[in-house]
Image 1: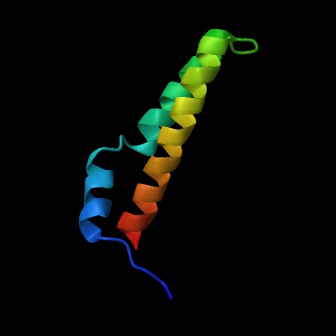
Image 2: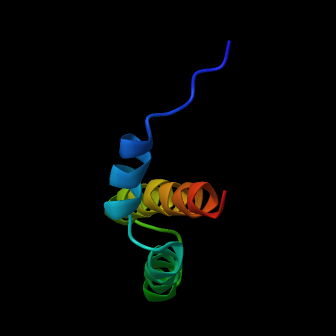
Length: 65
């Protein structure tokens, strides 16, 4: 049996997520600044940004549907 998500949860998620392009630009800037392997702090930032980017992409897909 499939359970559909509560639409208010989806709306809340979309409202709190920055656009994927904005997050992607931040990821690119992080790598450009580093110019090498990321430090542990930069790695944590990168991981956080990846999670945020994935949420933004999911929100775009849900909105398009």
